Image (cartoon, rainbow, N blue to C red; front, side, top):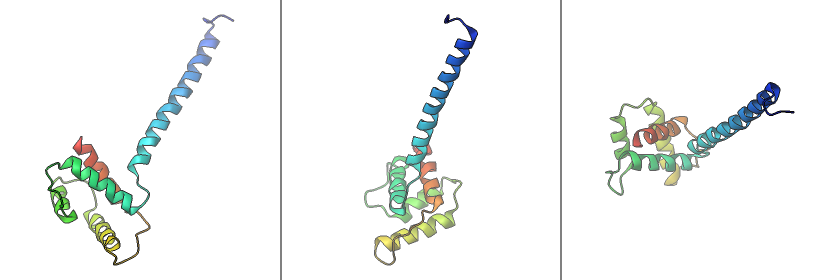
Length: 120
């Protein structure tokens, strides 16, 4: 069998394509996994990091409301009603007024992603 045989070359190209495709899929899945937190606490932690990158001049000890006022000025494509609702639930849980929210509000994760893109 010669290495210049067209069937051999085609098989080698097909195997390479499968290997590279699996590698690209793995990288994309890893990125998606990092951007989608599993609970509300991680979602807000990710949002806090994104806020710090997008607004490095935020004073230490800033409140969520102060940060969101700045973010609203960016005109991002998020449902602000849902973001504020999720923020209230998170604060209620964090300060002991209710149980921990089980579901993650997708708008919080979306806002963190949008801020991360702008903060780069």
